[in-house]
Image (tube, rainbow, N blue to C red; front, side, top):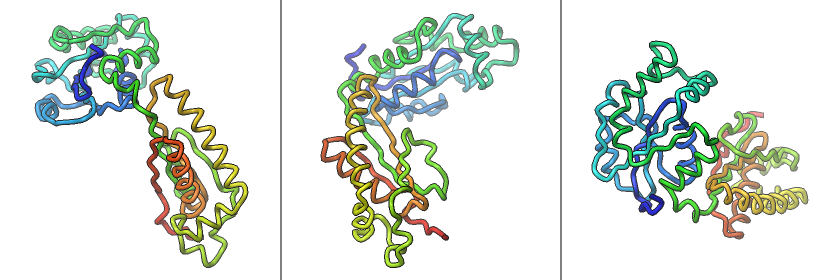
Length: 280
């Protein structure tokens, strides 16, 4: 199983509460292209897409009766996640999501779902019973099965800038607040510019604390990258914030990206609020 080509395509399916969301998240972090809740009528078109990454379509009982007749196209493999009924009952009780088959009681809904997924279960290429494994172990197993090349993939870091005035970066893993650095906004000739302009860059980086912060961040992120490698995590989003997201955060994000690239780290830099005008 672990010898699958990088372009292998899979259907991820199974019981509600068996860990499909956990598995999908692990596969995304491993670099797979995951499509959640794909309509069965779109399966053939999805399967015909050429891709360089492993592709996974989550198809389950949220599609109702349509899932009963799902027939995987040639070359598409099926991973089915299941667990004993008592485990599913416990997990569903802890979930805030309604069960797709919850017209009756919990046990009746589970039985109805098993019946709905009978054909997919019977034709599955791999079945994982998640009743006795934790989320981390489930993530490892599905990654080994579907995206084994992730073991060799490097960590990719996204460094973004933003302005607290325009709201936080909810998708960020780490947030770095650089509002303690001296602010070009209060210099009349620099105010209309952004952190992409050399004059603003020079002004911000002339603050000794900016250099100290950059040095510490590069050292820390280098260490973190090694730790994440052991957990097969491949994506990290570091958001750098200042008041308006136009000057200090842009400079610091650009500089952090430059220094990380010099350390042979794969980096993407983007700026959310650099073009917005701070009304102060």
